[in-house]
Image 1 (cartoon, rainbow, N blue to C red):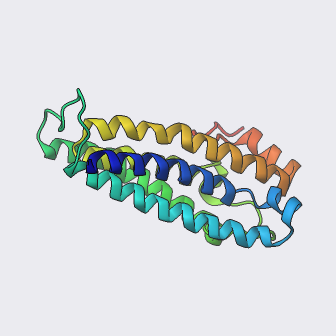
Image 2: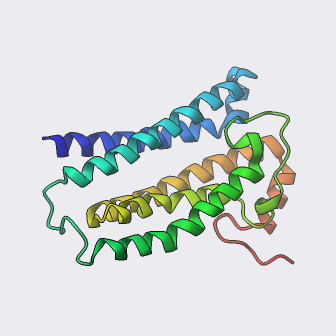
Length: 196
């Protein structure tokens, strides 16, 4: 029973994470409807989406102890240290990219502001360095927990993050207009474009 409750909470937390994150990256669009307080509300939505990520992490850990009945093996067929090495090979560069993206975004990473300008640093090469780094941390967590099921489940976060990035780009086009459209032409969304 605990396994099914945990899984249902994991599914709902994942969907709510998508919902609140999309809301958090839509200040310009929301401003057209509710006015300048949209930026403050987006900050609260960003905090909620972050809290939901902690719940998802807790669900992953709980799944380790209460797995669903599944045709998949409960654990990978190799020793845990192999999973540790795989997770480190994926997780270290992913976490580094995410941290660099957060640094380069500055306060805007958490609190959207109307007067904020386009970013520099890693954003000169990649439009979504935070998302590209962060999305890989879900499978890394699943691999560290040595769970084939969670590793497969973690793949749902890839389309979730694509939707989140698309929503963010639509709002950035509203905020920055032609400057952002031009930036998109020369910068890859998820993989760096060769600069001309």
